[in-house]
Figure 1 (tube, rainbow, N blue to C red):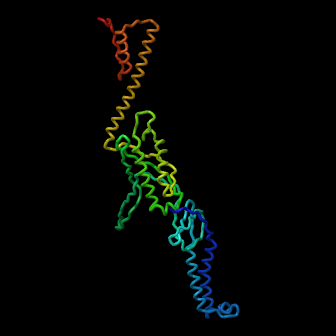
Figure 2 (figure 1 turned 135 degrees about the vertical axis):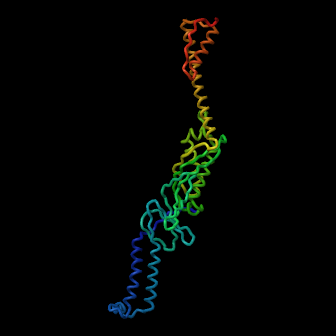
Figure 3 (figure 1 turned 60 degrees about the vertical axis):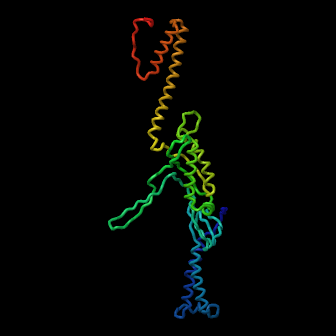
Length: 329
């Protein structure tokens, strides 16, 4: 594995002026050495001797091409960008300082973005082809359709799930040289980690304290982030945030699971109503016996309990019935 080395480079302003001087100065000197130049005699006889014409031409050509070659060493680094430098296949270091610099012209300079980036798992790049009146065909690329991952949860229910991942490159050497394409690596590993996470938890849970995808999205996101961090460390990528953005049952079972959720909600509500009704009946019987106002035998007690439970647990309002007789007639 390649280890990142942060290097520094000299400012590019002085090399820029030197390259421009080579590009302009040597052709000017060659022009001044021509016999037809009215001001060339002073240059030709400088220091008391004639300069060799062939040597001057060779030096001019060499200086001109040296100036052109030196311009290839100039580069600009914007904020939150980096340049990885390689010389004939050998990694020499990474420049991360912003500014105008000059390096060896033979360096291969690969630019990477250090900005914070975000993407959603399951997104795909779709192309739209259009044709104008002249018959010219143009293709526009853009993210238009999202296909969330379909996976089975812990209970075996097929669900659709997607997550938003916020990341950035922190090690340029690993991102460039340890993986083939670090952006594809981030997308594929994020998708794999999300599928693995979804298979470890149920979509929903009726048990208190049990982590579920729908009931504990914050805990699920906190569990997803360290797994992504471990997977993406090989590409020199730091995960800043990971959270679920889409969660739903698969269309083929969505209607069935909706009825199941409704039934579970009704049962839970009934359980609460029955618990409350039983408590109110016990309180009423205890209050009557304590005050001694009404003495109830077992049959009357059972009838009173039945009537109170019907009133308290019924879906509709109770209809009063006036009893003109007794329970025994």
